[in-house]
Image 1 (cartoon, rainbow, N blue to C red):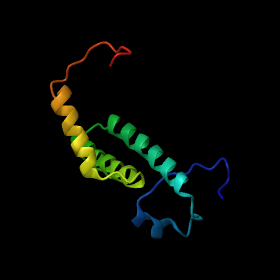
Image 2 (cartoon, rainbow, N blue to C red):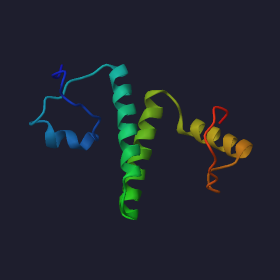
Image 3 (cartoon, one colour):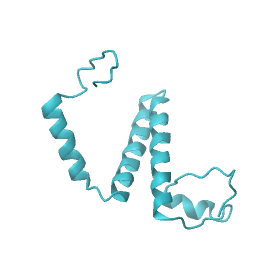
Image 4 (cartoon, rainbow, N blue to C red):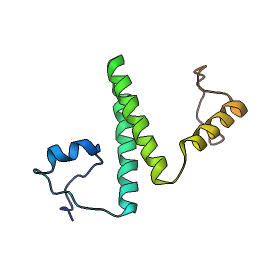
Length: 108
C-alpha cells in the first residue's frame, strides 16, 4: 500500500507503461476504484470550470464524459439508462438551455 501522505489519482490506461518504472502500481479493491473514479470526476469538473479556450473546453469535456462513463460502468449503470433519465427530466422539467438563473432555495 502507498504511503498515507501520497496523493493517488485515477489515470488513463495507456499512461501506465510510460510511468510504471517510476511508480509502484498496486491493485486496489473495487470500492477504492469507485472512490478514485468519483475523485477524478470532481477533478475533471474543476478542469472544465478553469478552461480558458474553446479547444481546452472541448478536451476537458471529453475527459469529463470519459470519467462519467467509468463511474456509470463501475456502478453497473448502462449509459442508455442515464440518457433515458436525462430525456425524462428534460420532458418533465425542461432543460438548462434557456440559461434561467434564480435564487437557490431548499425547494430546488
